[in-house]
Length: 261
Ligand code: BJW
Image (cartoon, rainbow, N blue to C red; front, side, top):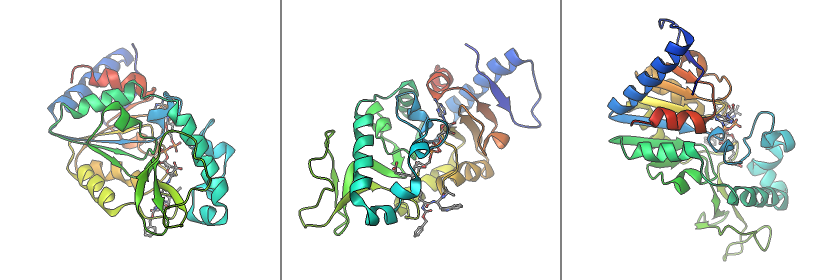
């Protein structure tokens, strides 16, 4: 199998085949030897499961405007519209299964003493694949939160009877996700930042790195001396300074990189 890859400026360039096997071997060794590994994932890691990404050709934002759906203002204006969109997405995701990329990351967790998977995804597929050292920075689509009491509840994988759903206290329930302009959980950001600061290797997988504060984590890790590996089908702002960048689907690259870990 051939993996297209780039190497960071300053690295000695080898022939394409040699670079390919060399860089795969180097990444494997770095990961095997690391005491501390952090992984940042985005929608691309679930793309091969059939979950739409946000941006790009088939991304959700192509058909829906983010500001009409993923903001607190949108929810205040039209909770029914926002809930219908989330219910539709839940139904889509309910039909999806974790793919080999999710599985490879769940397996990696079991081999690294200090491991954290930081995901921006709300689909729950990492957990379904068996990941437990996990921070869901943008929440989880399978939970609802009362807009008055802030209590959080799990949702079943069926269509919601009454849209918008209400809490026993009478207030509206909302999806337990982070919308634009809303703060992320402080505990989640602290855990993610600390993992980025101390990791020896960071894998950045399937994210466009356009949304903050998650987008700042790879640069933080790199500044603290981490070896940075990117896996994405397209270039991103990190590609230029990653130590290794694989421009192939995560479901192909990750199992290969983790093969002998
Ligand atoms: C594959 C693949 C395959 C495809 N294999 N790869 C600093 C600078 C600038 C702006 C800001 C800043 N700080 C804050 C902001 C504002 C804002 C922001 O970042 N805006 C930018 C858009 C400019 N950030 C916020 O508002 C955040 N809040 C905040 O900072 O609060 C501060 C505050 C403090 C105190 C009081 C009040 C506020 C919140 C951000 C919340 C983001 N929410 C969403 C929706 C979640 C719920 C839902 O799902 O409905 O999160 S938006 C959406 O984008 C979602 C994603 O998690 C997030 C990131 O997207 P992701 O995962 O990168 O997906 P895509 O589609 O963009 O990319 C997919 C990638 O996969 C592509 O690169 C493909 O190539 C690749 N790919 N197939 C490998 N098979």
